[in-house]
Length: 75
Ligand SMILES: [Zn+2]
Image (cartoon, rainbow, N blue to C red):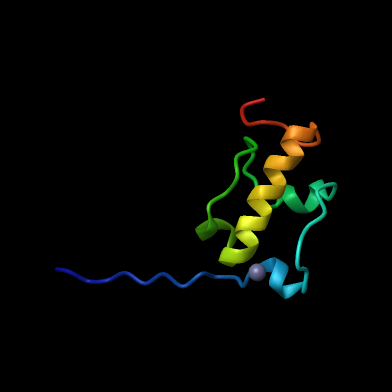
């Protein structure tokens, strides 16, 4: 059986919903929503974020890590 699986993402991108264009790096509460318990960046299928925001979020998380605001994974 060759069936294409089309998964519908349950939620809309939460940043689009709040009409935010970007997240300030200092907003760790927001960034944490895109991270797992082990401080890993969650994949899009789990966050439900759109491509654009997922990219911004991932970038901001990495920046925040460099700045020492967020922790690297496993700590
Ligand atoms: Zn979005």
